[in-house]
Structure formats: C-alpha cells, structure tokens
Length: 420
Image 1: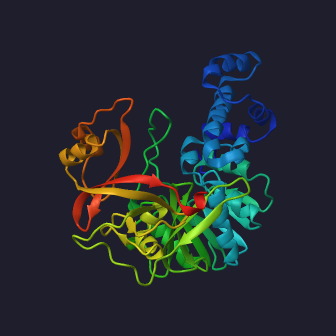
Image 2 (image 1 turned 45 degrees about the vertical axis):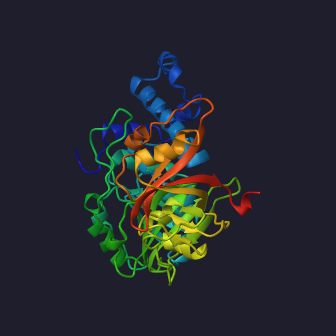
Image 3 (image 1 turned 60 degrees about the horizontal axis):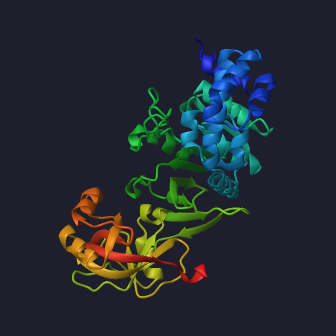
C-alpha cells in the first residue's frame, strides 16, 4: 500500500464525510443501545450495506459519548474511540487558540491534530491552520470536522517532515495512548511518561525551537522539573477536572515558570482564574503546631501545579505539611478555586482511635479523603468498625500529615461567603 493510499477504515470514514452516507448518519435517531438490533435490521432492509450500517451506528454511539465532554459540537463530528479520549474540550481549545492569536502568528501548524478539535478552535479564531495527522482514518475524520473553514486544511504526514517556519505558530497534542489492542470499551491504554509521547518530547522541543510561538498539550502528570528554561507550564482544570498541562514556548509565553488555570463552565461561556506562585510563601505548619479552625482544599489544577502555598498566602494560612495540599486557615474566605471544611477534631492516624471517637458520637458512615500518607482507605474504613444504621451520623475524615505527623482530621464541609 502506498503512503497516500487509504486503509479500509479510512475509506469508510471518507464515505461518511458527505453525500448519502453523511445524510444517513445525521438523520439517525438518538443512540439507544436497546434499539441497536432493531435499527440495524431496519437499515439493512432499506438497502444499506453492512459496513456502512456498522459505521454510522459506531459514529452515533461515539457522538453520544462525546456529548458530555464536547457539548453540542459533538452532534456534527466524525469521531474515533481513541481520538475522542484525547479530544480537547471546546472551551479549553478556545483558550489555546486565543493565546496563539495573541502571540501574533497568522498561520498555525496543528501537529498530530487527531480529530482536529484544536484546529477547529484555531480556525474559528481567524487563524490559517494546517492540521497534520499521520493516521489515515483519523485524518479523514479531521478533514470532515474542518470542512466548514476555508483557511484550514488537513495533510497526512509525520511531524518530523513538516516545514515549520520561524513566523509560524505550532500546536502539538502528542498521542498518549498505545496503538493496537483495546479494552472492552474500545479504549487503548493511556501513557504518562514523556518518553512514550508520539511525536516524542524531543520532536516537540525541536518544533518549539523553530516556530515563533508553540504550545503543547501534555498530561496533567507532567513534572515541573521537566520544564525547559524560558518555557511556561499551566495546569488546566474545568469544572473540577484537571484536563491537561499546557506548555508554551516563544512568543506564546506570558510568564515563564508554572501556574494553574481553573475554569468554570456557564451557559454564557466559561470563566477562568489563573493561580500563580507567590514571592514569599508562608511556611507549612511546624511539628506540634495547633491546626487552625478551617481547612481549605485547593482545586486539583493548583495541586498539580504544586501551588498550595499560593492559597496559604491568600487566606493567611499554612499548608498542613509540605506537599499535602491542605491549608489550615483562621477564617473562611471566598476563593473560587478552593473548597472549605470546618475542623472538628485532629486525631492520630490510628483506625482504633478514630473509630472509637466516631462511635462515641454516633457516626456510622464516613467519607475518606487521603493525601500524603500510604494508608489504604478501604482497609482503614473496615478497621474503624462503625455501625451503619439508619439513624447513624456521617462524617468526613481527612487522612494526611500535620506538621510531619500522620493524622486524621474530622472535618465538616462548609460553604463560602459567596454561596449566599
């Protein structure tokens, strides 16, 4: 097969891009697994071939799965299972596009474009886009998804063969899943190490050394210690889910170093708050120090970026112990990227001691939160030996370190002043 030849899967995806096959797909009823056999029989009876029927039903199922992540955009897309797993949420893709546009580039190479959703956002921001995708089936899907944008094109190529110029922008979303055998849900295994990226981390940095402005979407598990000099890394969450670590180079850099970006969805658009490091972070609690009456838990993006000290500085508090993320504070403040708890008791991290304290107060059910200690929550819960009756009270227990000592904090979730 020549490099430009289409695989059978790509040929089938091309059929779905337009014409009668696309009309059939777009007019299917909402996907219902209980109706698949009946719908399959009806479509076959109408004269549609077996491959096309399977393909449109697969697309219908993927669109239904995609709705939670991609919203209304999912209804008009062509998708693959792996591509959907790595697809960028529209609000996050719009942030990428806005940053590259603000960097002053007119054309962006989307390298390893996948289904083209970042390319859609780039084109929607008014930029010329060349989406580069090696996989022929995925490239066909991307071409369909970008068909409404005359300044966007899709090419099949390897990233190493693309002539990125010094005035170009570049966006890379390296594949982080193993090709080949999938599980029962159609998902392949997720990868987390930089060495496993495709294109490689070395290729990503080579592009960044050439382009005027470069961004790359990496796993939230990216380590700040791997950040190249002069680059910027921002860990991004939306609605409580950490979705990526975006690394920026060149004219796309706003503040070298690390930050966290916390997003909240709303019907009229998403709002974003950036959390940056502080110049003079307060020290964590010392050994034997008393815990202040309120406990703040920062958004997961703030934790991933290693910035709980920024919360501690904001609320005049202290982290319970280096790296655990929980911040003790003297009062509750309205911080949109933190969750608050009232501290009711601080106990040694011994299940027998904690269980006795809980049983004496009629607690029969607990929510366990753990960070910074090796305790297994399921084993700890069993060792509490609580009696879960209808009238039993509930409690939240934080298993962590306080001033270097493994501890169990009995806490109660509370609102913030802005909750009304």
